[in-house]
Length: 346
Image 1 (cartoon, rainbow, N blue to C red):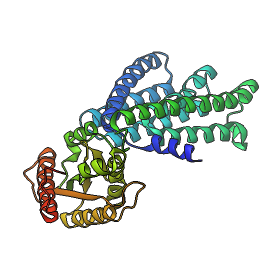
Image 2: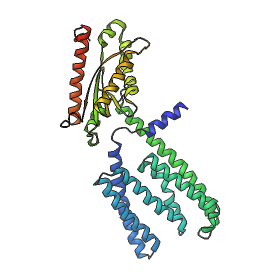
Image 3: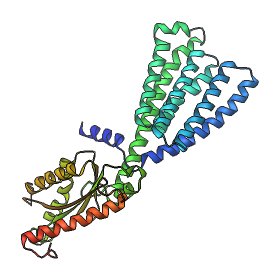
Image 4: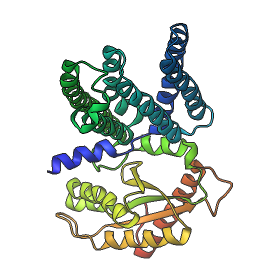
């Protein structure tokens, strides 16, 4: 059960700049479909095939629009939805209209093969579920009287079985591919020791255009007394201190916050909210740390500095990070001054 839950979590999580990846897919798909449908449009006009001419025209016009939406307007999600709706509508026409059985099989069987890879998990599975219900309804329900004259008896019996087998196999392959793709991305962007994101991921997030939000806040965390714990209780205890920090951060800031290990005992948090809200969450995080009872340690003390875009409107995310880092060192200096220790002996 836990293993299945872990697989689902990996499949549904967003890792890195998935939006950029989807943008490239949508633009490429729009170009390919426009070219293919354009060739089909000319052929269907020459053959005087009215229905196929209309569907080809819809594909050319529709995918021209989706290409502009993705490549120019950067409306990636909307582009994916429109593409899926166009293909769903056009591919619904094929089994209902009849015609060449091989042609119908060719196109409808393609849906499970590319929907998840092109449109993502939710849209892809939604399309597959719709076409599965459509095929069952058309071939195995009383609705089949409307298409019985369009196909041979053998086709009526075999095509639904073929589609179900194709759908199950294609979705298994697509989900497996998506899982291992995200596992690879997760390994690239995750700190092995703590399970938090690593510095590479954090710095890439800072460079993303959508990070420039008015309510963006960055917090920098540093563990106090690590050297003392390493010297007195051993490096295993020090490692326990470091590994516990993401737990406190997630508990205080919530699952939507991006928590990254940016150095040895330093962490950073990307989140949104007001300065007052971030201050409250920071205090909670410090309380959780101070009350921590682990296997080798019985408390953790943190120094934290936060900077919010609402207070520093002229700073970009990288500037906010440096400002938060400055405030963290001020907090650390105050901590050691209160304890009466030289800060160099952390």
